[in-house]
Amino acid sequence: MRQPPSIETFGGGGFRVSGAWRPGSLLILDDAPRDWPARGVETLGIEDFAEIIAAGQAVSEFVLLGTGRDQTLPPRAVREALRAAGLGLEFMASDAAAHTHNVLVSEGRRFATALIAV
Image (cartoon, rainbow, N blue to C red; front, side, top):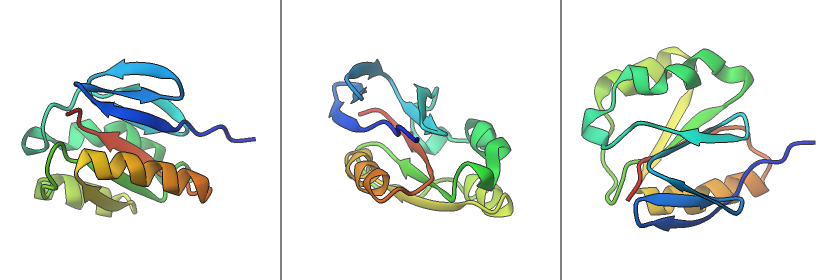
């Protein structure tokens, strides 16, 4: 049975995920939280999504991207690479994305979450 992690709090440069504090940006893929080296949406590249793209649609229907303090359009190369891999992209400020993550988990959706720390 799936045990997707919940995001309990955020801010101060990190996230509390299922009871554990995780400093820095966060990637949740296949229900496993891990560190994500992204520092800002303006510097995101295809390589930042390589693990998600490699896992593909078998693991995720789409990527939920938290773009930091503000909702910011991700670089075109990232959007096109995800589209070419057959993955949708939903992006919003990281606080909204953290809340949305929990709602989508409660609905049983399969997706990757990538959040830039604030």
